[in-house]
Image (cartoon, rainbow, N blue to C red; front, side, top):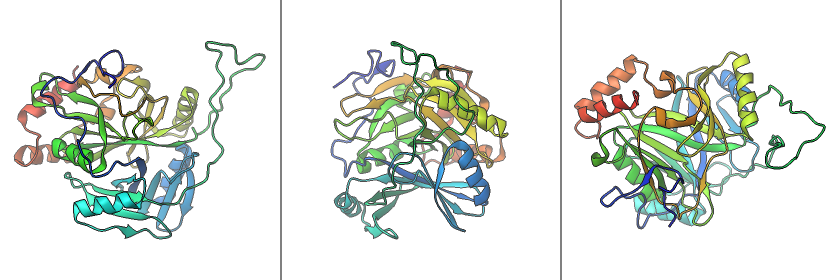
Length: 369
């Protein structure tokens, strides 16, 4: 196994007694995220932002909007008409229908047919988030891609030619990951490892609380020797059950930057960026859509196969990036609001979760380090 603490992806690896980072005998092993589902009250506004952000429309009627990237595969996002803006849940892709049958038997449910073609198993994780696992779904053809710019780095690749990336939407290539908050971190993480066969790439823990175990996990798909994104799913312990953000790959740093300039010129709000993460190494840029949903452009993320062991690091605001502007209160979700205070009070009163007073103290320390 490749170690996690030799300048690979985290400051140190696991020690004896640490929480396991993978299940011994998972039910199945999903291959990737298929898509994310949202509800929005205004599909026209959702589509306008989506095009400015860099999506293409794959399907649209009066009730649904399907958004895709340039790479072949399924749509990245399904948006349905709803009374308010909200995240519904993720869909993961299994390798075949046999995996769906195995998962359905293990969870005491059934495989259902999807309209058109394909099949799905519908589940709910311990946090209450609806999770779909699909197979045999429609494969959308490739669209023209935004080519990375040729760089005069290492060797001469550009002579008698200038660099003038257009200030235009960064063309989304694919869905990369989704990040969720849950007050039932351990049980929810175990559910994904045991049922979907996912692997933890990195654990983070609150300052001074390594002894109580991790409070954030960056989780990847187990594709064997085929590399997968450093994280397809990330989750962290917090007082609420909520969507944090989702991330979409673009061609390169210039696509991130020029696409960001285009979004700023259209009046959208940057949440944080541009910078480079530590866990996952992505070049990132975070934005808010008109309903304040946070989405990320990223490029140049880490890819791990199943030989890389888990890394451990202390969770801190300063540890979220190698370079770039200081993390914002907006990104950290540190702005007080009625629903945040309600979630906090509910979590502290609920004995059936992991968010207690000591965890609250640890979370507050994260923002100051």
